[in-house]
Image 1 (cartoon, protein in one colour):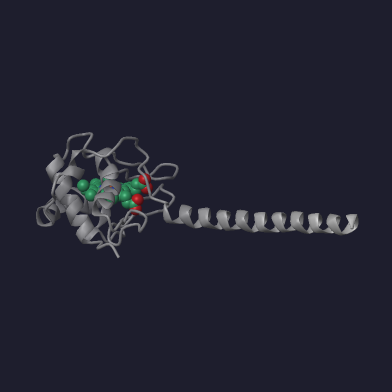
Image 2 (tube, helix red, strand yellow):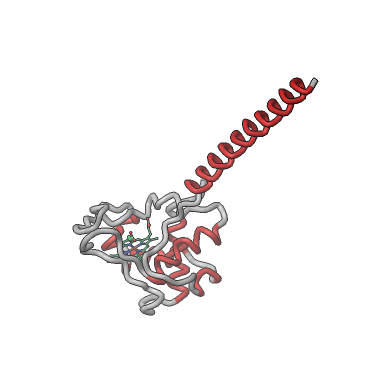
Length: 161
Ligand code: HEC
């Protein structure tokens, strides 16, 4: 009787351990996929979103802003291919297609991800990158409306899937 009881307790304990480890493994796997999905590129320069995220942008006007301010580094229509010696990547990232971590079906989130780079700028990884992105918002090179317009243009090149 007592040995039977002991076996039952042992079996119950074993079950708890097995189910517990399975749950832990499942949680770890879920966290791993979540992290992969939430790898949103952030600029090296700190700061929050600017006023442009609350403005309606015009993609046609943004195309002109892009030609005047972004093409020399991000390429015609943002397709990239511009060398950036001294950076780990070796080239300036393309914006067409843009890093998929920045894209979001919620256009407000998509705009916010892009806005941080345009507001504050970013220095790419590497010993001495020849090209660094300037903070167009912080330096007031572009007005909030121009930033909203150029974001609308960049987002129009990358329709969220
Ligand atoms: C002097 C070159 C230069 C100019 C001009 C420039 N950028 Fe950039 N941009 C860069 C570099 C270099 C990076 C990569 C930064 C990093 O890796 O941290 C970058 C990154 C970005 C990113 C993030 C892309 C990613 O994959 O992480 C966006 C969005 C962006 N730029 C938009 C713009 C827009 C819009 C303009 C024009 C208003 C512009 N850039 C002008 C050099 C430039």
